[in-house]
Image (cartoon, rainbow, N blue to C red; front, side, top):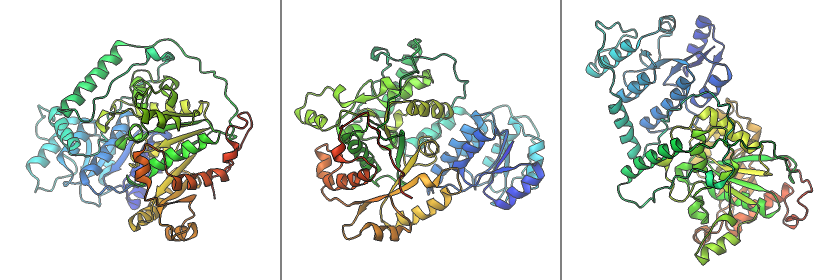
Amino acid sequence: MIVLATGQKQLDEYLKEQLDSKVSVDYLEGIEYAVYSYHTKVLIFSEFIPIIAPIPDQNQRYQAILKVLETVRNNNVRVILLTTLDAPHWFLGKCVSLGIYDIIMGDSKINGEVIPSFFYNPSTKEQAVALLKSIETQKEVQTSPIIHPTEKEKTVIAQDKEEEQINNLMLKGVQDTLTLQKEDSFPNLIVSVGNEENVQVKELSPSTIENEEDTIDENKNEIIEKNNSTKNTTPFDRNKKKKIHILGDQKIIGFWGQTPGLGNRTLSQTFATIAANRGAEVLYVEMNYFTSSFAITSGLSHDKKNFYQYMLQFIENEDVDIEPYIANANEINLSKKRLRKTIEKIPKNLDFLTLPKGFEESNFPDEINQKSFMKYFMRNLRSSRYDLIVLNLPPYLQHMFAFPIMLEIDYVFNVMTLHPARILGFNQLKEKLSKTPLNMENFKTIINMVPKEIDKDKADNLIQDTSLFIVPFDNERSVHELDLNIGSPAINEAVGAYLEELGLRAEHLLEDPKKKRRLISFGS
């Protein structure tokens, strides 16, 4: 199967006729889904393909593209790359190192007649390296799409130089989306980490420690040593008796916002806490590792039971049970009186799978295989005992914890504000998402930080859509956050009113855990 991802409809239609292809993708975020769904053998990809979530910085855009291409290549898919002379040399070099040798150079309107020639006559690694050398030494020369080098190259691009360039970008704060995923076959062995003593633990370095770069390297080496030294081989029982959900069916909801700072972290924690206070068994999962803050804002952090340790164990044993890594407030031992009072406010039936104190973006384990993780992680969540699972997702759609997760869960709660830029971005986002496999009926919007003089009807009119509910701006929110309180009276009232519409009323607090309460539809 051939998948077309050129970003140019006329070119796609031409190639469909020439190459007998039936599948085309309109956006970068849809490529991985198409590759998995159609057992793709060849991807014809152009760097001009649109991205649903705009990335103004060009280096970040090329990194987002590389992240997708790495995943595609790890599935043994041949890639024909359409690019230009303006493409960064480090980007082209990384493509070649991934095994992408069919590189067609041109302007924004690639000559479609050249592509079938590449399709039926694959380029070699030596030809690709020669093309890079030609570009590097003769920037002003118009490069021919097909390169026939006069002599065989004796060397290839130095991997150390490429890695140094990528690391420099990471240190400047550029999002690291270049996780090379190892596509291994699923193991037949079912592995257990049922006892807490068996859970492999990697302690994080405090964010204030000196020589941060050396510390990160040492952390990664320790992770490798621990994973190689200990393997759990006791099978665990997957045939757990499922409870009767008081909400009817289990629901998995992901809170997401287009940019950081929109309040999806606060709203997701508040939503989970109030639902638990009203009788539901709730699991809160912190997946936004770019700005992990649950441990700081709640005072809750467990060294062994956390999302980071689960990811590390997953790298070693993909079919690992998630249960040993889920924590509860009662398991947190605190000496400070202030923190003990905080824990007393946390509902007993609210569990959390979050990132530990001291976790930083650079600690994210690059070795995670996206396809395998999605399979086993979602299976773990679906088979769990929880009535409600609340996920806090990262804002970058192209990340494996964002759009791919959205496709698998029941509802996406999009958090936005009434800032003009957010409204414009929201309308553009809806149009683009409607062309993806995402079920837009389950894509709901919450308008946060709404001025008091604006009611829901006015807010809906401004965004030209019907919101799930609105949350008023609370100028005292920072005070409550400093006291380690989840939410605030104003925020809690708005979220609580919506949960009451769903059948979770305050007077139903744990009145009958065996009685079913159906979680009704999340709006129209």
